[in-house]
Length: 456
Image 1 (cartoon, rainbow, N blue to C red):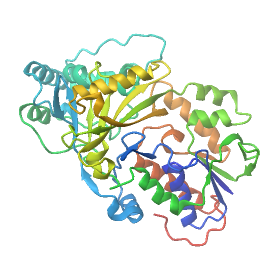
Image 2 (image 1 turned 90 degrees about the vertical axis):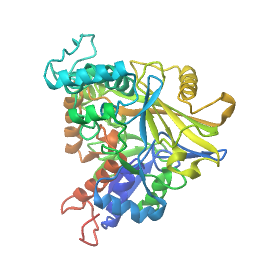
Image 3 (image 1 turned 45 degrees about the horizontal axis):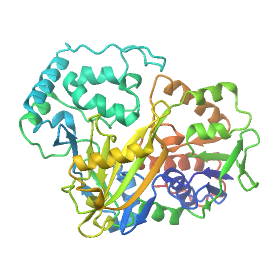
Image 4 (image 1 turned 90 degrees about the horizontal axis):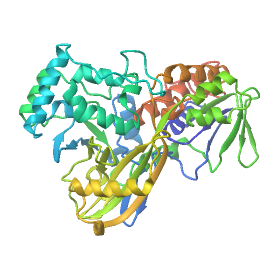
């Protein structure tokens, strides 16, 4: 028996690929009454909102074929329109190569700083020790920012934006999470983007896919139909790694040979019976940020076609805002707009939710997206306890210790929060596919396989 915990994209993908590969002994449990995890949508008063901006960025041809099979023409490809709002003006994303339109003094500061960084003459701020735990000397994300982009880009975007996003200053972050997520900035592009308005989109997310109607949950529903049957409304409250059993909230028990968990890693470890002290201690070192998402249905549309906007300035409560109805017109009634704003918080930076909501509304007014509070036609506030995994000085060692223990007991912890990583929706689908492939291999544990063709 293979047991899967969690019906988000990773868990559903694992179930889909296991069943498609011929696995007959499989059970998936999800504590909510609906599948999807964070990729769920809500319809309110004619508007459709997601739990946050969930746009699908696909790189792997096999995944593109897969989701096209699930949704077909209802999942069109969209050319990204991403911007930055700072100093009262909109500039194109990414900031580091699109400063045209900012005040001349700011552009001058950015260009000189970038040139100094390329010449290796940048003075990186000293990293104070305040008990939070710093990365190894010279390995912080803040240092990388200054040495790569210079003090101008650091001050006007990279440091304040990431400080808001992670709810932690970049000096306490490592660079392990970056990968494809931070676009490069060759000096010639920085200069050209300061002198001219460049319209070409760059970066890993230059295009995206989004359902025509139903929000991102349309993708989940299409996958869930193929991954079932699903045990919805069934919460796993305890896992015994030695006996290989899962206890459910209704008092029942499921025995497993292999367990696939997509629960947040601290939540999984907290449910393990008899976990060694070292593993529990490692889980106690894991850090993360949470998210309050202010979803608003607005009368009128002042977004000018923008999909999402990065907001680095500290005077704004949120670090990013976006518009669902610019990605899918059916997300709002004609002449209206469905927008959201994201406010990050953490255990070290608690949130006043009322103040954050007010700040989001005031910020959207300052951006020109909202004329008056009277124009708010619908509202949905979403609290996401787990949003971004913190890549601090403890992350690598702690996650390695936990995953090493889990593997010894037949537990595969996958997905953004199961693997405890920074990853996309596509990565979640791939993670489910890959764990299915491992379990479908001879001796992998998936009994009753009926055919041997590759799983895609």
